[in-house]
Image (cartoon, rainbow, N blue to C red):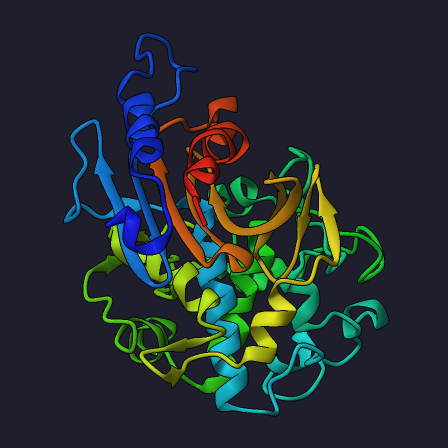
Length: 332
């Protein structure tokens, strides 16, 4: 119950009623499909709207990038030779740099991909970028999206700045597969899904038959909540280490700013005012209003699913509803 974990029942009731009362007449009206809240590892709130339910998998869109980050952490725990400073082109080429490789490309590391700072011309916000997600997925000349990404020209020096790029996150998946010599769906199932009790999910696939890890994983709401709870648990699930505490810490370090938000290892960061101070929240975020969020200081994990694709209402939950309704429900 809310009272058992220091939450206010009336405040949570007010939050749910606000979701029920949202207008539903225009495309820009917020459309919330689900909200789930856990505190101290206990499920406190679970509500569904617009026909969604606990047993209906939902598209996480780009929030699945944070799953990619966790997979990288798992691979690094299992194989210490796979590290944030591992050169991308070396691991993708079987341990040696391709002959004649651009010296700047030799400097690109797994960490650069995890924080979107590779320097490759893979910039989702620019239509003219050869490596933006739509450009790569819509072209038919080369169906190996890893190869397309690796062949992109450099737009700036590695580490110079960050540019949001789904193909960078997807290339992390390729590096994991190459390093572990495992088909990525198998690696995800055995090392992430099974240990966390995630039985039903759907992976988007590339034309080559590899899993696409730039976004679009379908997952059940409670299982999406487990993603943030794993981070709150400092990488452990039921006492078993899934990712190291050090990797969790690195994932939460704000290395770059994308737009107006800080960015770590494929995790977004935001600060909220709370009882006269500020608390830091970390979240997986996806188009339409998909969120898996955790706040270590308050021991809270939170999930929202939504249907506001390509709309400014995508951000309503983390910018307005969560700070104005959920945080005030924290009583102690």
